[in-house]
Image (cartoon, rainbow, N blue to C red; front, side, top):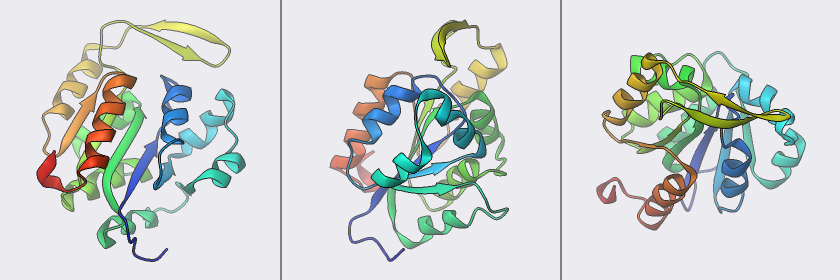
Length: 185
């Protein structure tokens, strides 16, 4: 991949099904988006009707297949103006808060911060009761206090915007697309 003439969005997908269909449908309407999939995302996407081959036909796709998360290097070369992680599992949120970067997605988050690239995180666990889509049905979930606390802690980290719903995600992404420099956030 050559240096980008126009910086792109790096979009990290985790193993969450919460608003997955709507989030991915929206992301696929955007120009200049590359998708980074955790191993869990690669497993979960087909359960929601998304085939990796079909996604690869519409966007660049990077899978979590290397121990050193090689695709993270594109952040160093100015390819991306923003990292979006969404939907983000409670596991991913907790790791980001704790500074653990042992997956492609958590590595992206850590390195984006080190490169001063803003991140938007569409966290799943933002409310005490969450009604969400699971494969083949809708379920009601009750995030644990630790999950809600981690989401709140993540929102306080530098260069990180946590969003709670699809409308807020769209608004945050559009703000970053209209002004991709860090001084506009």
